[in-house]
Length: 382
Image (cartoon, rainbow, N blue to C red):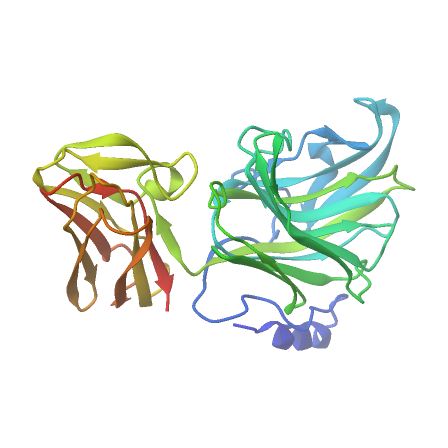
């Protein structure tokens, strides 16, 4: 997947005025490109993006400051006289309308050459109107850069509880050894257990990511620059060449964005028993009745071998002999799970070959002993 070194040679040979970094793209095979913007148009694509419009720290964020042209997205960082919404400076940025989950995120950026601007490539739920919305729970900062320090990068994870502090903030601020006013790539590989941060394809920091109640949210991508933490020293620009997201593993739930492939037959009801993710209610079939089904059908971006898991909800009233059928390229594999034994958690249903698309599935069938409970499954690329 690492083709950027070849691209660099082609770019230089063509006489283009910038060189690509030595490495980019996902750190391993098995990823599928799902979302991207190469900024090849003449204006921001508002079908993909919202503008950042809040007033924060030293600047007001203005849509007019964001332009697209020449294959780049540019945030024009301006002095304002008279002040705009009480601020002497204005910044801006784009926030993706699409929210995404675990996978590899990357951009290529050239950061401001004037001190006092805070430029970021990060992920958090929101639409750009505020950074303190009630949906704010998981924040992943791939790149935070204060332009007064031309080589310093901060990367890390934050857990918030709406506007409050969720109490989990692993991160690293380090000297990259690079002049960040030149073009470099910044990437993050986000999984259930860690976020790995890359600069020019080199792993620089790994944040532990022990799952808690809000770590599996869907997040929007932010490409932004504001006057922060101190007043800017002068106008400048922040530029982004592209943004891309690749997916490797697939998570399906019974509600929200991950419920696209979920369906039921028979009688099912909302449960007060927690599922695997915060604000993600589980479901249960009418107790002591056999033949109710819940089916999860992923939309796999690539064919391959995937280890399949189901989230077992351990409860004294759960189905003690729930049947799970995995439909895969070679047929059907069946596993029975006792929901009354052991702790709640992921249970493996085996590793199987799947075609790309939606032909594969996991189907739960209630046995009639207790209450079958449905919540989430995942397909992990082997």
